[in-house]
Image (tube, rainbow, N blue to C red):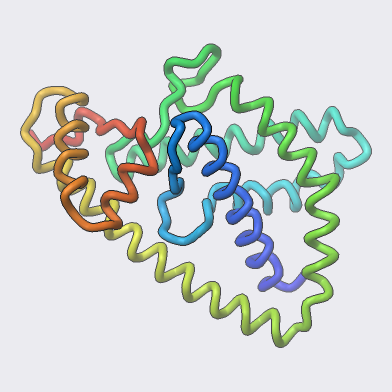
Length: 217
């Protein structure tokens, strides 16, 4: 496939992941939750996961059990690394599975690993064949123009969203409190009175926790 088709596949999986997150979290919290760090209707971690499945798991298509296990490995590593990097970059724990059984540092847990494996199998046996066939029929010129427009919009979204998150991080640094709970509560109180983008961020991650050492000494 051409490079722009990979980007379109990334966006499609990111959009599907956004829908999955909305349905799952809204069901759990009994309210509509617009999930994700970005403003647009996509969760890039799912886009990356979808691309990794397509690129790495095709050789396991004849062995469903191996594909299932490898999908668990890929998605779990991706979730763990994403959680770690986001925590180090922005001094916050955006999701936490510490209350779940068989978790690893609260970043991943067995309860999510099994669905990851099932999603990987669904993607490889059902979604990918449909999406790849559809994308290969997209005229080159149209595909390049469309992907270019979407890419510009995506980059703009990333820049705006990261500015909001950086403001959130700076706010956490400025608050003089002694505990993670106090800092988190105060950050939520302040952000709830700020811009729509800030309010969307804290509403999207109800379990968000500020890391204690984010506070200035």
